[in-house]
Length: 167
Image 1 (tube, helix red, strand yellow):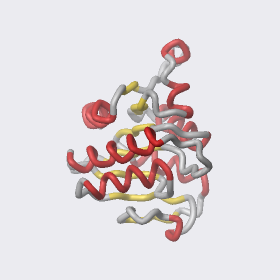
Image 2: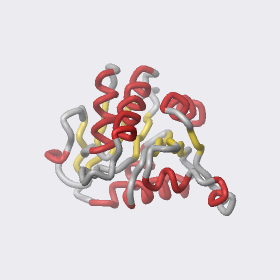
Image 3: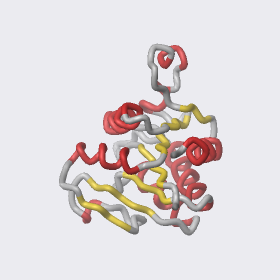
Image 4: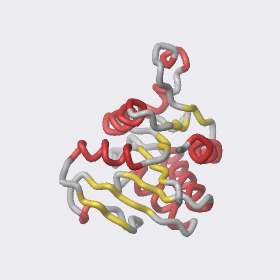
C-alpha cells in the first residue's frame, strides 16, 4: 500500500512565505512522488500548492482535503475532497496521513502539527523554513514535551524520515 505523506504549511499569499520555503515544499512534493508516496495536503495555495506542483513534476498523485468546496483546490490537486468543515478538516488530514512534514506555517499549521502529535503521528519539521516550524525546532522548547517532532535539516532528509518513521 502506498504511503500517504502530508505536507502542512501556510497558504498565505501575504508575503510571509519565503522563496526558500516555497522551493523546499516543491522539492518535498517531488521527492514524495519519486519514492512512490501519495501527497496529501489542505489543497489550497502557498506551501500546499508548491508541494502539489512538485509531486506532479515527480509523476505523483495529490489529494487535497479542503476546508470548503472543490473550487478551492489548487491546479495541481488530482483528488479534491471538499469537507465544508473549515479548520476542523485538519483532524481529517492529519489522521489520514502516515507521516506529516511541516514547512513554515502559521496558526493552521501549528494546529495540524499539534493534532498529529496528539494522535501519535510522526511529524517531521523542516528547520529554517520559517513560521511555527522554526519555533518548534528549538530543542530547548521541545525538552518540555513528551511528544516531539523530528527535525530535518534538508528536504531530502525530511522525506527520508517521513518514509522511515511512518506506520
